Image (cartoon, rainbow, N blue to C red; front, top):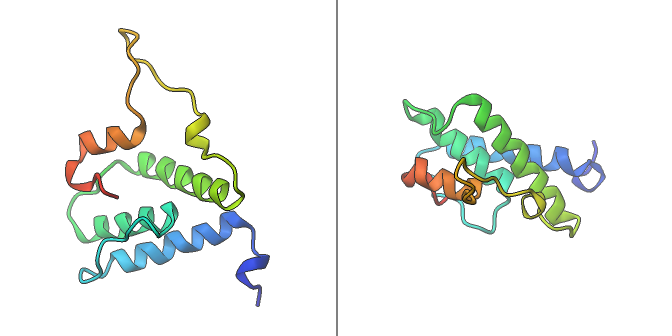
Length: 115
C-alpha cells in the first residue's frame, strides 16, 4: 500500500474531498472549520447538497470549484501563493472590478457563504 507521503498532492487532496463528501452526508456532523483543506470543505458542501433537494450550483460550476480547491491546496502545501491570488480580476461591462468568486458565492447563496 502506498503511504500518503508517496502519493501526488492532487490525489491526496482528492481523497480529502471524498472524505469531506462522506462526512457532509452525515447530518449530525458539524460544518468544517478553516483548519480543514479547501478540498475537504468543498466535498463536505457537496455532501450537504446530496442531503438537500437543491445543489448550491450547477454541476459544471461545482467541477470548476473542485478543481480550484485542489489547486489552492496543492499551492499551499508547496508553499506557493494561491493560484487565485495570481488570477486576473474580472471586470464587468462598465469596467468595474468584479468581486472574487468567494464573494460571488456569498451573494448567490448567503446560507452557504461560510463554506
